[in-house]
Length: 551
Ligand code: GLN
Image 1 (cartoon, rainbow, N blue to C red):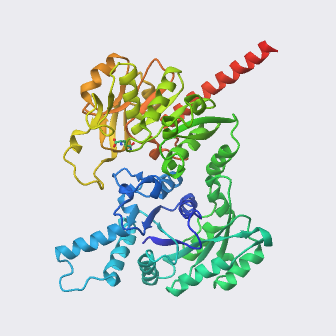
Image 2 (image 1 turned 180 degrees about the vertical axis):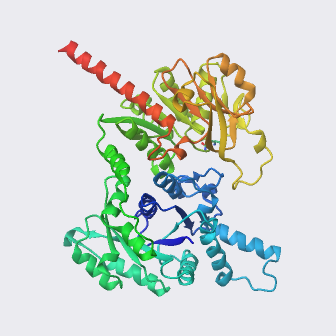
Image 3 (image 1 turned 90 degrees about the vertical axis):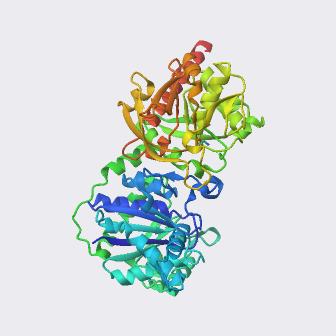
């Protein structure tokens, strides 16, 4: 039978619950346990797919096409596992299921209520992963902060399950913030005490506290927290701020959190745990041998980096693989469009440009201008989803001479609709969960940069889009030098493009960033960063040559 860890958060949001959960999972996996992780979100949207990135950050898409919370990205990257719809459940989905059941007559005769019907539905979702028999431990992250009105039903479901399953089978880890008050030069425990009191009010005694703080917690502070929260000192774990998120599993291991969890859940300690690969990776991230490399990330949500979370992380992985630290320079595409920043300013100090995914026409012309700049100056370019579509528009306009080329997403009836709604999308009316979503195969043409990167012909990647390259324009695009390096197996959909005469100009209709992992860097990010590094080194040697001549 699987064991359960429920992770709740207190005091404040953004304390790092997702990363803590992923780290606990990583540590248990390093101890040979089969672990899965689930996130429960308190909002009423059935999934985050219909939310703006400003509201929610990136929407993380799983292989099975679920649009989920970005924390699932951390679970996948840290635990090297593939998540699915079952790993992310929102309150909206719970209510929808309950209401659907009511309409079907499943509760005939009963008054359908939060208690017991909604709570029972939550409990069955909590048990869903464990019931597959595939896991020893299931970690459930409860979104929001204890005390929020909207997460109450989740907490009640946790309370009931803890009771039902018994102490050795389920536990609660509560993550809090212990703020450092500068004027008093002190870490303050009171918010943690209050947050535990809120949990106690609903009948849950946390088994372990993880206390995030700017500085390490002293023994005395741990004792004080334990005393007022009904815990022994050993059950209070400190988590000080780390330089990179990749250190978090190591910090929690130093604090013996993994051993504590094993003891609480009555799991036999199998002995040594090997985290050397993780140490090595985290060292590489912190101290790369070959310095830094700047890459422009061009998108309309540039002031809100959470919208591009997986892209940032993929750059960390690719940086480690290439012994450099990738510094991402966020460029707002509308700033280029509005003339707030010139193309030279945007591109001056970078060795490559990635044009980001997105929706709607704001900032599109800025993206197209950046792409033209990178194409004409032979600067490594990587276009993802909308970024690839913009590259096709740019190529059509400026290389094929198709003036007025555009996507029907941005203009109703463009003169040349080089990007158009997919056939399968034309009858779609509902917005939620109806894009082309999830994992699809793609066939790569040999002899291309794409093939060089992947080293194979058949790949699968995850998608989230409604528009595609218009096949009516494939011939003219190809005639002018655009190569369709990746196609759907039936040849109908263009999945990858490139320009062979350019040093590295690649666009993809899918989202490679979603599949980059700590231990398996994504081949395209790897190749893009490698090429950008080459350009950086060429620039450096050109400049030093110039200096020598001038001297
Ligand atoms: N808006 C574009 C489409 O729907 C691109 C989507 C994306 O970048 N994820 O096709």
